Amino acid sequence: MVTVSILIPAHRPEFLTEAIASALAQTFEDIEILVGDNTSDGALEGIVSQFGNPKLKYFHHGFDNGGENARALWEKARGRYIKWLFYDDILMPESVALLVDALRKFPQAAMAFHGRVMIDAKSAIVHTPPRLLGNGEIALIDRSHIVRNMLPQLDNFIGEPSFVMLDKSRIEIADLSKYKDHVPDFLGDVCAYLAVARLGPIAVVGGYHGAFRRHGAQESANGSPIFAMGLIEWEVFLRGEAADGNLTIKEILAAKQRLVEVYVRFSLHFPELQRFIAGLTELTDMLPGQLPTSEKFKANLAYAREAMKARASAVKLNAA
Image (cartoon, rainbow, N blue to C red; front, top):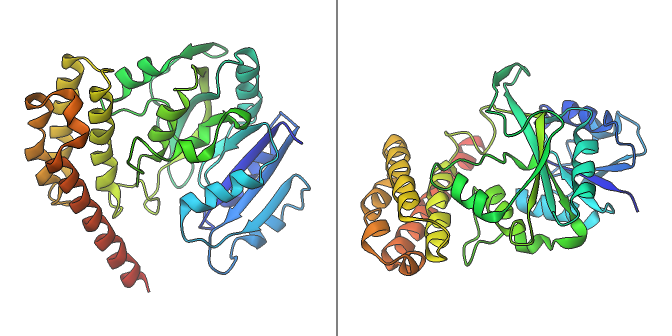
């Protein structure tokens, strides 16, 4: 058994070499690095094999499904701690060591994360988010803090999975991928953080110890066929947390205003969002406990998923 398993689910060759190199450069030595190749023909094997490092292991999955690829790596991992690294992101050398230290210092935490900068396709820094803590500082946040600071502003201040470490001994991966009765199509990371935070506080490590790459080919780009679900799922979480009594009226109103802004902004490209704009009156007209089960909202959500599937199919046909 090793201490940390770094899991790299990958489906494209671009940037993968840099991601693997950053994993191998970690100052924390008791690691294994598992690369899950999701291409149909094992196209990424050559990139992995060129490193010739015994800590690096290659698996051809070919699921054509990112979630299945990630779950398969989780099941193969031998580490006490799981460190995600998406194929197009980069870790600074001290990333793993700092996150392990945080989880050891606060054993009540099942997850730790650190800050990151945003880079472009050429690895130039294009954005530096506000600091959460100073360098070398570690703190704990609870689920209430996450809910009340994420949802009103639709702001995933924790960041992407590449900058998170999880205590595998305390977590079932199936519990990370579902929010109430909703399985996210886009905001799987926020869903997972909300789930882990039910187990206890989350450790925050100060400083920027990784880089999230923005480029046109990633599914999180706003031109992606599934991007609209990334907006709608904020409302799914909002309705659920409001129903559970975890948000004040003021916070619900702030989230409603933010949702209006983003729905309007993207409704020309994603026409199904018009239905959600009209449905936002429910946030103030209905009792909070009724919000997740609204028939109108459930119908709009089903309609949006069909629109998303149609766009994704069209993209595949055009690429064939």
